[in-house]
Amino acid sequence: MDGVLVREEHALPGAAEFLQRLLERERRFLVLTNNSIFTPRDLSARLLRSGLSVPEDAIWTSALATATFLNDQMAGGSAYVIGEAGLTTALHEVGYTLTDIKPDFVVLGETRTYSFTAITKAIRLILGGARFIATNPDVTGPSAEGPLPATGSVAAMITKATGREPYFVGKPNPMMFRSALNRIEAHSENTVMVGDRMDTDVVAGIEAGLETILVLTGSTAPDDIERYPFRPSRVLPSIAEAVELV
Image (tube, rainbow, N blue to C red; front, top):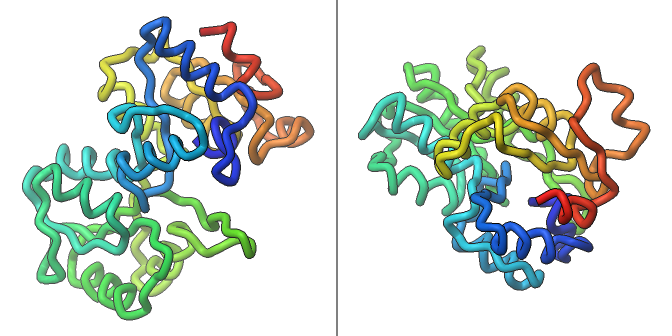
């Protein structure tokens, strides 16, 4: 989503036309984000304010992917959650109980205000036997004032205190894309991933067996591509150049 369709809540050139073409051609699609703060309804409303119409059922977040993964691992389980509505709602919807008493999992997601008390509780529960899951490994997130510590940074703190590494569900784990493919009943051999990051989007797309398109409107500059040992299928200046490919 960010860096491909929008940047700082403004639609990028070609984004509206690309989405319209998908609808006209009746292509099944999902808009993916590693952000676990917001529900699909929230994100759909935010995109609409940017001039982009995306139904909430066409949005797939790391929170939804995490809830799907946990439900597959242990249906009807329990979790202690550090996160916001996007994550807690997703877990409630798959039938999970949110508790701080002997949970099956500690689930770490993104939040605007990380609580030292909540992090301490998470550390003690993990040491007590709860399994450690995190929505995504991003170490920083954007803000108007500059980078903010994100899920990956807080996960590192908890790992240092417990000696336990989390299982990250979101990108670059190809699990994120495989769960998205299942959501729209698609197959990897005829699905394309469009992203703006080599280290999360492109590598996860390759590992999930997808054709990959890198657009240069986000965090990757042309010179950055050479630093990686893998290549996207295509490199385009923006999503505008992808309209004719639909």
